[in-house]
Image (cartoon, rainbow, N blue to C red; front, side, top):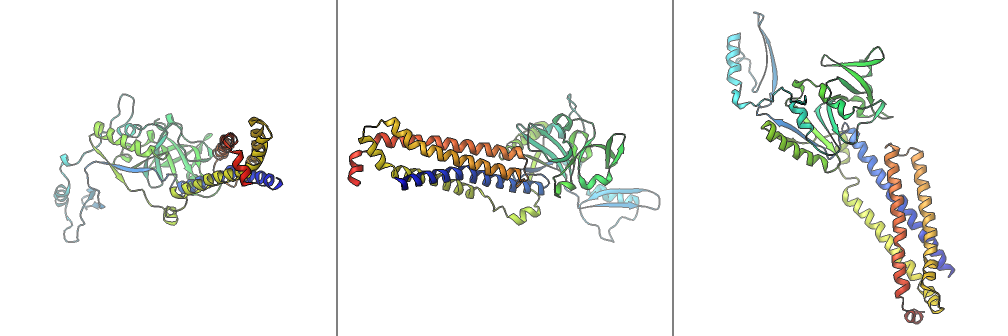
Length: 404
């Protein structure tokens, strides 16, 4: 009996400590890894969808700037290189050449630079066509013109704040910048400003974390402040929870076809160094499934073996005329007491990990995982009552005696 008691107590304690702590630590580590990758991509998750607007205009290969002695200046994009002999030598020849390489007007579809009754431009209406918690933006290198709806994960700030949804569509020129741009800012009264493309923006926040990241080199502007010329024909992306970007991209495609009469062309996500290094291997879905399958099998195995170890004692108690309820309380009482102790220790260890700032994620985000796995552990502990009641009520005393 002593051996059975020791086994039941220790195994119950260890089992529920593991169920509480291991999934919490594993999932938090996974979120930390994904978050670090998201930060390295410029705060873009792996599920984001990149696209541009198909206008029918071919992309120029390079830009030409020509000044003639007459004082006439020509700036234009063209689509095939000029050799030295073919270079126009006069304004007349240049105009003929430009006319020859320029697509006819009907072949180029431009987006109207107009606003609807609500004051939104075509691009703003496109990016606001999504639903749920998502963030959509114009992606121009280290610059983002952003809009978001609901409560998506927003770029963190070390000071100040990020835009509100209403500010994203406001014409007020606002900026959230990385710390690398602080030297370019200047004060006007109590506010700080920065200039970008000869436009003055009010700085309301500084993006970044407590350690150097790519966020330090990014600039975020509210999309309502963007000049229309910077929104036409540039790369866009929509981000959010795992399935949301795909759904919103399809919604925006329908909007573009119906309201603009054009197509959205999906693009490959820009590859960053973190993607090349990771290769997308760590914490893949099959590894997560295997981990949780192992925990479930361990739970069932230990519970089954524990009940088997109690068979003889349950049989003796039944022969002695002890009630089923009393037998149940006796068997389950030890499992419950040691299980609660294991869950409690798991919660304490997890709290210590949080207090030591092991994870760079926000404490509130990781704390939700801690509460979630505490609840799951308690639920599994309560579910132990089902097989115990079934064993007590269906145990064949004669078979137990015969095996003994």
